[in-house]
Amino acid sequence: MRLFDTRTGDTRELIAGHTVRLYVCGITPYDATHLGHANTYVAFDLLNRAWRNAGHVVTYVQNVTDVDDPLLERAERDSDDWVVLGMRETALFREDMESLRVLPPRHYIGAVEAMDEITELVGKLLASGAAYRADDPEHPDVYFDHTATADFGYVSRYSTAEMERIFPERGGDPDRRGKRHPLDALLWRTAREGEPSWPSDLGDGRPGWHVECTAIALNRLGEAFDLQGGGSDLAFPHHEFGSAHGEALTGLHPMARHYCHAGMIGLDGEKMSKSKGNLVFVSRLRADRVDSMAVRLALLSGHWRTDRSWTAELLTTGQARLHRWREAVALGATPDPTELVEKVRLHLADDLDSPGALAAVDAWADEALRRPSATVPDGGSRAADAVDALLGVALR
Ligand code: ZN
Image 1 (tube, protein in one colour):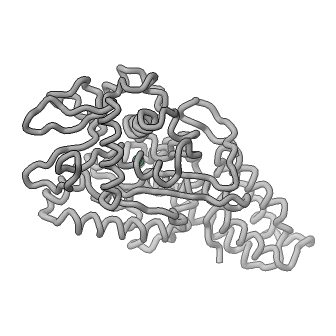
Image 2: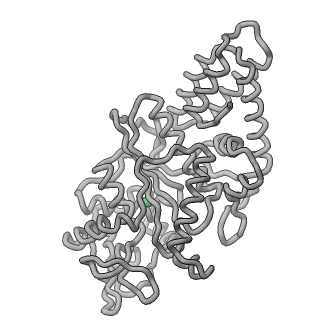
Image 3: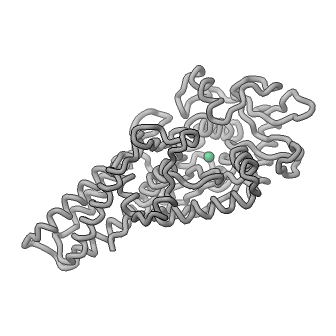
C-alpha cells in the first residue's frame, strides 16, 4: 500500500503487519454530517477495506468529541441540553455512516468516557515539565508548551508564521493571558460557572481537544501506530499537538507512522462552511431519497486528497454510474471479472486511486452491456461481491 504522508510530503509504502493500527479523528457532535465529513470517512473506509481484503486485521479506533466548546456553544444557542444534543448528533452520524456503508471502527470512544485516561496523561505531561499552569490564579488552566519537543511542526510542515496565522482560526487561543507562548495549546480547562466539569487530580475541569485523541489512540493502539487520519484542516493544530503530546510522553516521534489528510469538499466552487450556510448534509440527501450509493460514488469519483466541489452534476454522474453498474451485474452472465478485481486492488494500493478503480469498473460494465460472446455465468455476482468488498458500493 502506497499512501501520501503529510509529514514527509511524499507517497510512500506503508508496510503493515498482520494487524494494522488505524486512528481516524471523529466528529464533534453539534451538527449533522456534511459531505466534507463524509468524504473523510469514506476515504479511510476505502483504506480499511483494502487492508481487510488483503488479509490484514485492522484495529480501527475513532473518538467522538462529546464535550468541547462548539458543542456547548450550539447547545446554549438553541437552549438545548448539550448531552442530549451530542447523543442525538452522534446517533445521526452513525446512521449516515451506515447508509454510506462506512464500516464502523472497532473502538468508538467518547471523550467523556475517556476522562480518566485523559487526566492521567495530562498529569504526566505536567510532571515532566512539558505542560504548565497558566499564570492566572482564578483559572490556572493547563497548557502544553509547544517548545517541549524538539522539532514542533513536523506533521503539518507549516512554518511558525503559518501556524500563528492558522491557530486562532482553528480553536486556538493565542491571546489567553498567562500562557508562556501564544501557540501553546489547552490540555485542561479548569471548571467555569455554567460549564460541565469532571473531578480529577488536576482540579475540576474538562479536557482540551488534542489531548483527548492522544490518550484514546495511545491507550488502544500503542506507540508508533500505523496511521492517523482526518480532514486536511486537522493537520494543524490538531495532529501537530497530538503527536507532540505523544512525543513528550513516550520520547518517540512521530506518534503515528503515517499522517493522512483528506481533501475538503466545497459547494459549486465555494468553500462549504457553517458561516456561509451552504453545507450539504448526508441526512438531507437521505431524506430526499437520494441513493446513498450514488453519493458514495460521487465522492469516490475524485481523489481523496484533492479539494473539490460538490455539484448537482457530480451527483447525477454518480447516479448514472450506479445504474449502469447495477444493469451489468443484473445480467448474471458477464465477462470474467477476475482481471477487474485485480485492477481495483492495484488502484487502491496506489494511494487509494478511486477514480482509477471506478474507471476499471466502468470498462467492465460497458463490456458486459455490449453482450459479448465470452461470458461466465456467475460474472455479475462475483463483480458485485468485489465492488462491495473493495469500494463499499452495494450493487444488488
Ligand atoms: Zn483527533
